[in-house]
Structures are given as C-alpha cells and as structure tokens.
Image (cartoon, rainbow, N blue to C red):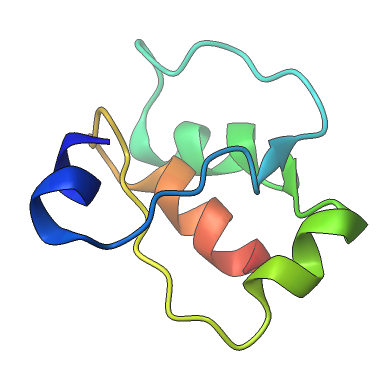
Length: 76
C-alpha cells in the first residue's frame, strides 16, 4: 500500500487465492519448495475479468527461492 501511495499506481489484493494448504517452506530445499506450492493457487472467476489485459506487478513479502511468486505468475 505504501508503494501504491508513492507511485499513484492502484493496489489490488486478494486476486490470487490459495486453493489448498501448503506446508511451511522454511526447512525445504529449492526443489521441495517448488513442489510444495505447485497447483496451490488459483484466480477465482470473479477476479479474472478484473485482471484480464492488465499489467501486473506481484510483490512477495519474503523472497527466498522464488517458488511462491513463480507459481503465482504461472496462474496469471
């Protein structure tokens, strides 16, 4: 929200939903992290039209291996 305020670019949260629980990533290897989040996220039908044709910047609060942001990108 701070970045949105500084840039004037609108913020939209909650457009990507976790459709299944995942284990904590902390002690997992890179490969295990990617496998852990594979298929865990979806874009609900009501969010699809809001995102269609838009340029999107995803921000991950804690970037380690990129497994979560990579999976979110793949559903977009």
